[in-house]
Amino acid sequence: MVSIRAARYSTTEARYSTNEVRCSTNEARYSTAGTRRCAPAAAAPFVRLDAREPAAARQEARTSQVARKQETRTQLPGLDDDAVGPRLGPTGRPLTDFPVPKPLKSHGPARIVALCNQKGGVGKTTTSINLGASVAEYGRRVLAVDFDPQGALSAGLGVKTHDVTTIYDLLLSSSKDPFEAIQHTSVPGLDVIPANIDLSAAEVHLVNEVAREQILARVLRKVASEYDLILIDCQPSLGILTVNALTAAHGVLIPLECEFFALRGVALLVETIEKVKDRLNPVLELDGILATMFDSRTLHSREVLERVVDAFGDRVLETVISRTVKFPDASVAAIPITQFASEHPASVAYRQLARELIARGAIA
View 1: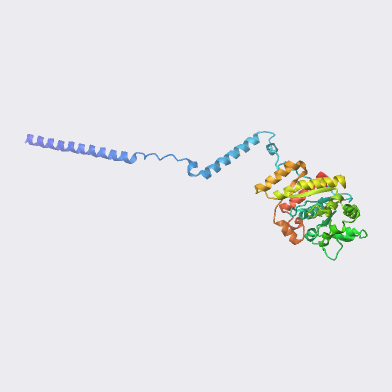
View 2: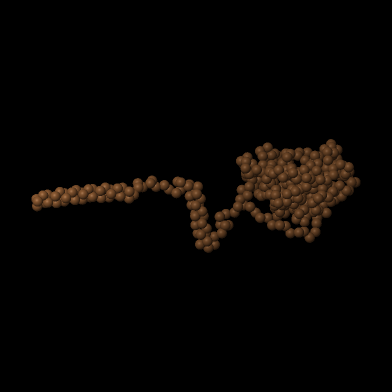
């Protein structure tokens, strides 16, 4: 019996031992499974922020860089924006802030300025209208003389050209009173002597006149005491009418379109001015060359302006008139652009031109 019980106990212990082995095996399995579940996943490849979001990252970098520069500038005494350098204008020269001219205590005698260029469509009439209006805004009395048979100046200021006394009548008859031909415009301080197609016959009638180059000077001499500035809008030629204008003038303003063909004729015009100065009018001066119809978007305009500055230097005015559709719109309305669109950049440019010419002494 004892041996049988011992055998049973041994069998039971063997079973317990087998169960312990099984438990150990199960624990090992659980441990392995837990290890597999708890093990960290494989590391994902490193991705830079700026590779995922390049625009945002670059913007953030630029913002921080600007902030650091500003912080650095605040730490440096005596550093201001002027240290960077002056702003350059279209002519490649530093921009000048021309002061607002002081009002005049009295008027006259007028300085006579001829706007001359033998090439048409360069802005002579547009400049005559808007420069005259801008100068009048600064308290000067201005007389614009339409000396072109097309009569564009008269039409651009909305004055009558038919059944009235014109510049043609004054040239042919010394008995005519120039004040009878003067018409007022919508701009206070700006008056006009009109012209029409009859003026085209003046050259034929003046051929046999004595001292025919000085007839316009004789006419303007009678009204010069009443004005501060007289602008002569010349026709696009170098004929007897243009020579009359140059003989009567104290200065010449050359509007020059920023285009190659307009550039070609400037040398011939300057030569004509020198001849008139030498033979007929010793006081004649070149007041400046005004770049017009400038388009900063085109390389051609920039190159032409650069060549003009290289050739004529300081005689090229700092003010540049850009091309804009507002000019023909103002012409249709028969008013200067300074009234049609007072705050437009073209209006600002012509006011700057008036201040620049006053600062240069070309206008009182």
